[in-house]
Length: 192
Length: 81
Image (cartoon, rainbow over all chains, first blue to last red):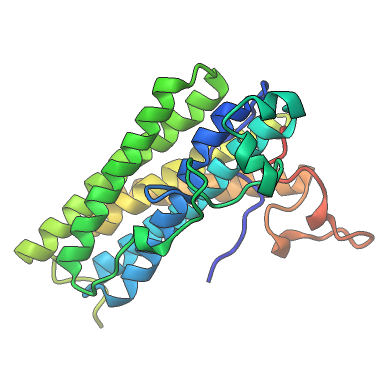
């Protein structure tokens, strides 16, 4: 189960409204390479993982992705909350605004609602972990793209944190895949 | 410490704990890392206790005001601080 802690994993305090940027950043809330996709991918794949290491890793990274989902939702909300109707109308956030107002909805930056087709579960640990490696890199690319178009230091500071997490998760998934393929799992530890 | 300063301290130590946690998932017999993970977890718990004493509960389990259920109090994490 999960316990909710009433805090963000990384602080978000955005001073300037920017509905255009909100329309881009929402890609990491409900888009195919976003945090919802990541958390559901790992938390669903973990049931068929073969050993203690991969069960733990997918649970822990999947849980961290839920914290990242909350961070991205907070960025979208803070960017949109104080934007004027006129600013919104003249930005790419306008079409989103018709259905969702200044709220946070899991869609990609084209307005397409979240789709579980963005993730896979094969129950083959090598296939699943290889997908996870690619997923971390694709998420990193989206954060790179946000950094290319954003000049808001309050947003970029948080996006850089999230981008770094993709790289660390990629590293850990790589180690897990290597251990499974080469059977380097130490005989330990969890057994009686 | 102000509320935000303490919250940032908690986030820093909790992040370090999480980072050792993920490292240990794939290096479960690294004794030095186990020690560091434990130190970060202890410091995080200590700071959370200090926060909850001064600024209210971080989890519903820690709500302890007999007059009002202070778990619900603003701010929530997505509010501008």
